[in-house]
Image (tube, rainbow, N blue to C red; front, side, top):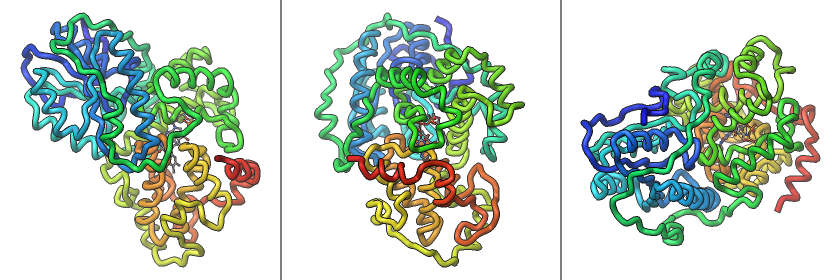
Length: 469
Ligand SMILES: Cc1cc2nc3c(=O)[nH]c(=O)nc-3n(C[C@H](O)[C@H](O)[C@H](O)COP(=O)(O)OP(=O)(O)OC[C@H]3O[C@@H](n4cnc5c(N)ncnc54)[C@H](O)[C@@H]3O)c2cc1C
């Protein structure tokens, strides 16, 4: 079978002459069996060289402040993915421990000659991938199965903002926004018996905080993700363009947890949006270029967030390894923050006070409560929430640390490039421009309570969040 995949989606980490053995897809960021370019590429290698194929996931005992909430989402999703893979003749191995040890061991034990993994720009993942690469004697490939246009293709540098990446995305989208080929039944059987996955043992292996419980409103897994997409498209999509910034309306897609854990491919979302809207991508892109923001339509608005903004966040974390610190801010922001370092703060709160939603501001506390209880704060409130952390801490360094800690701990979609980029935008002007100077913020864009009041029914939002159980 010729590779069904645009070769630019693939990067070679270790080149290695062909030898027989097995092919393994080390699944990381993209936890799904369907619409997965990394898995499709691994299968194409298996087909080409007539080799067996397996999928491996390494469950780490802890990961970047993730709690039981995130881990249960992962484990339940993987249970479904294992079943789907088995139906295709592809065994699934859940390894417990650290990738640096577990993957090289697996490669040796199972005579893996070709290892494929998915792309993830986060530092921690890049670091253990590098160690794995040095420890294995096999070809090793990385496939961007998350972005529609591979992160290394859309741009070769850190972009200044949406306005600089957008033309590149729009130019390349028609080539990359293609339908996925199906995953086929794999014809070459795995050479050794595959142990049944012990999901309970996996759960027991975790060294995580169990006090942050699962979110009741969302069911993990590929099927649930596709159902959630269809429900959104049928019931709420029409109002997305006009209503998504009102936190009292349920007008966002609520897909971010599925996209973050890879239960759903952004490319699938884009394809379904296009099929519903009936407009060709070129027309939407042209309208985006020419038309005003007010009348672009829900299709253009969603594709802007899903593709331009999301892929911009991947671009930021890919090219700026300081994405989670003030060192990653643009120079103008570093300067203005330094100039206002000594400004008196009207309120100062500790991390614990923020965490318990114990500030003087009922709107901020309500947003914090939404995140703690549901695992998903409304998108508009996230900006206000992070900017107030800058206003009410002693320094931008502290603000970054507090915001990242809370975001990564409570948000189902946390520990994601979107989170680091969103926080760096709010606190450090990343992807933004300088605004009018004011105390504490300097030239960083400011948001306040009255601004929110003019946009949505603040009291109603507060009331609803206070009723959350
Ligand atoms: C301070 C702050 C923290 C954030 N933390 C996260 C996070 O941890 N994880 C996360 O996925 N997003 C984060 N975002 C971005 C955005 O708020 C969420 O992606 C969005 O609210 C998720 O809800 P949804 O899926 O219903 O969004 P929708 O509005 O339905 O959008 C669909 C998809 O488009 C993408 N998207 C939407 N808005 C943005 C954006 N501003 N930047 C990048 N991609 C976007 C997401 O993948 C989202 O799932 C953060 C933003 C800010 C300002």
